[in-house]
Amino acid sequence: MGKKITLTAPDGQKLGAYRADPANVVKGGVVVIQEIFGVNHHIRSVCDRLAAAGYAAVAPALFDRIEPGFESGYSPDEISAAMRFVQNPDFEAFLRDTSAAIAELKSTAPVSIMGFCLGGTVAFAAACNLEGLASAVCYYGGFIAKMADQKPKVPTLMHFGALDAHIPLSDVELIRQKRPDCEIHVYPGADHGFHCDERGSYNKDAATLAWQRSLNWIARKALKATS
View 1: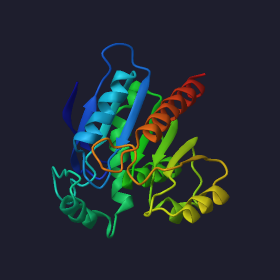
View 2: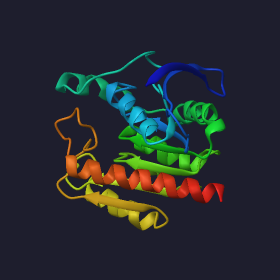
View 3: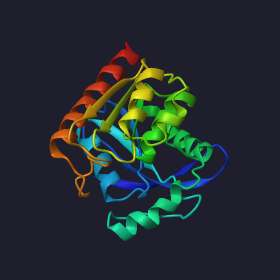
View 4: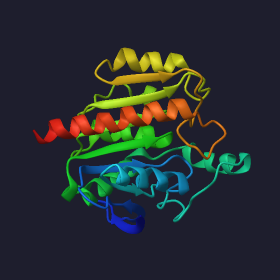
């Protein structure tokens, strides 16, 4: 369903991306932001699912500035190796590359953004700092609590797992207090990465509910943006 494309960031940096388009009517566009594992099979499948739901989806390869073409699976060794990308994350560079994906989808506006793990934080940062978005969906973004003083420019939905050791519930409560303008859901029994059906932490019930909420959120906010 999808294809590889090349994007150009505002600073001239070339980066790869995966794009999936609906077969019929296009409801809008969604930028999909990766986990620390690159634009791997899981992220491509998210784009394909969005395309099946009627949205043109683009996932920019945010690590192409560091290691072009990087993608990883979810074995313990692969997870350990991928952690190097979040030791000192360059969110300014991530936002430049994200803006290139927003521009790619401009003709399919309204454009929303959806991110997972590291991408959940990038999606939040994009909602606060970038133009051209109608809404944002953030799955278990580990750095959001540190950015929670920033105010999103667009309606923002967040999903967290109650058992996520990477994001304690105290962080989620801090985000709730600082960002009452965001809609936040915590899923009982769900761990970090609960959306990904390729990980041991996959939680079908939480993933299904969060996905439906996400699609409804994007659809409602897109409708409002065009009305």
